[in-house]
Length: 194
Image (cartoon, rainbow, N blue to C red):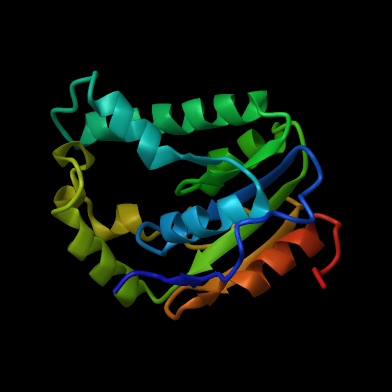
C-alpha cells in the first residue's frame, strides 16, 4: 500500500510561497516522500526536483554493476539535485532520502528559506512498501541487496532539522494534502489559506 495524498484544488495556484522557498521532503526509503512531493509541488506552484529521477537518468549513461556503484551514483544524484536547486531562485520541492550528517550543511547553503516535510511511517510498513517496489525499479538501484541498517538508521529515521521549520506527516495513512499545504504556507510566513 502506497502513501496517498488527498488534494482537492481547481488547478489554480494561489498564495504562492515567497521566492526562494525550498520544501525539503525527507524520510526513510519507502516512507511516501515521492508520492507526497508529486502531490504538493503543483499546488505550491514549485518545480519538483527528485533524486530518484536524476539517478534514473544517470543510470542510463553510467554503468552501475554493484551496490557500491549504485551508492556513488545516488550520492552524485543528490549533488546534482542540490546544484540545480541552488540555481533556482524561485525555490522548489526537493525529494530525497536526506542523510543528516551531510545534508544539514548542504541544505543550509541553499539560497533561500527551507521548510522540511518529514515523512514518518512505521518501520514495518516502510519495509513492506520497499519490498513491493523492489521489482519495479531499475536493477541499478539494487533494492533487493540493501540491508535494513542501510535503509533504516539514525541518519534518515529523524528529520534533518537544521533550524528551519519541520512539519512531520504520518504517511501510514492518507495525508490531508490541503492541510499540509496550509502548514507549509504558514511555515513559509504566508499564514493559513482562507
